[in-house]
Image (tube, rainbow, N blue to C red; front, side, top):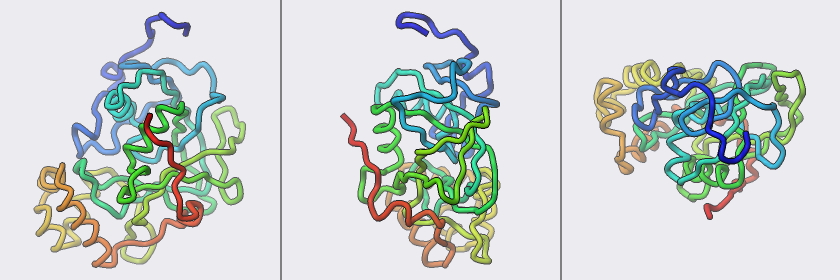
Length: 261
């Protein structure tokens, strides 16, 4: 595309990708695209390439792979530049459950170390302004925020593009609270928000006392209530539900932070 060209491609609505978890918490992590594309406003365009020099590649393990969620975040910071999403095969990671309750009304996803395990994820290629916006949305720039952005080392992990080309220098967001385990100490996977909340509420009377008995009640009570979300996060820890993701050591106690302009 050249400056002034109108985007040409299907809209998110036409692709069934238009619902953002920020608007519907039970839709978390949102619908992911079928393949690589470039988010340009309300449209998802065919990719022009798989590597974008000058941008930072960041793995998306939750709603950051949802074009609707990304559209929401970019609009919040009045950013309109196209944003590439590239599908990749990643070895050494799996999608777990963040050990915190988000004020957006859901319990989000967070990666954990899974040696030898391979799965498909998306890489978001972010320019400096987009990177700063996503960092801010993940709480990287706040001492009380939930996530650090860390570089993924080549040793023990492999990121491979659709072309088969390996990609180094990829970042990802790691939860500062750790992840939830399945009762045996093993990190639990994130099965989708409605199922996850149903399981968590069934397991914990304390969680039901705070957030109600149904996923709908949980989202309604949690949304926008920072005090209640913080209490829910502390409850996870008090009940012994949290475990390390195995990725904390890569943060070295400091986030890779990019301040908003």
